[in-house]
Image 1: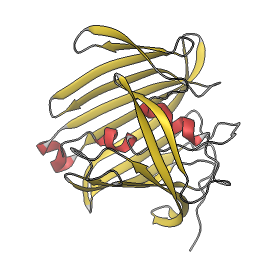
Image 2 (image 1 turned 180 degrees about the vertical axis):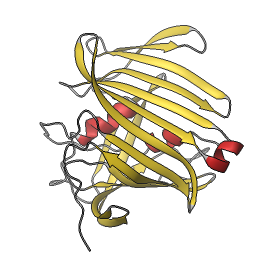
Image 3 (image 1 turned 90 degrees about the vertical axis):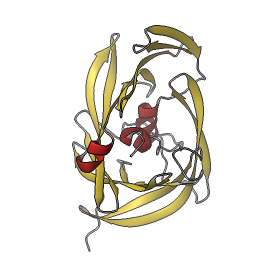
Image 4 (image 1 turned 30 degrees about the vertical axis):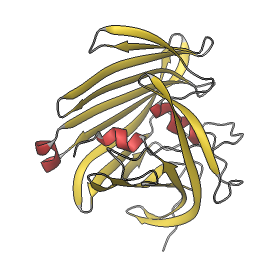
Length: 258
């Protein structure tokens, strides 16, 4: 497997807007996903939340970790860490860290966001240099995007076919992220039957994805809005990410009994 487990997973985020007031997540939340080709497990990805302080501001510290396992690890070892510090009062990212090792290809970056000046300070530890770049108002990083949107989804008003875009700052530039709402579907999972919202993110076709409509994402149709299943048609085959375990959800997961 020649692509970051966690990067593929984080590329499956989406964008919708509402007037949500209360956070949908909390300190101690843990999500674990199994990445697999059919019955063959390629790796695992986790997302964890911890409350902390950064520059005298109350933040949620989000850590995402992804790695290949088993035979996949023997052929192509991946160990990736993504971290985001999200200001609790605004849902804005203050710091983003990307530390990856993908078969010997490495990156070690830190991005500090100054939302008053709209300047991002990018520290590249691998090459020992620092640059400052502009970023647009309300831009998110790859990790904070997911948690920002969990607080801003209005499942009661969204209509099938609705499309949205979002500015996502990644490495040294801004990327436009776009997706379409496809409707509702109930998925059979190891936890039971889970009602879901179904989305189609648009991605760049080429080296990783077969075409721009290669992704489908199902998130729980409840107050949590956590990913339940992600399907990706990649250049190297079809990959799925299935929710394997969860802990510390702020709201009970909506499960329908048979």
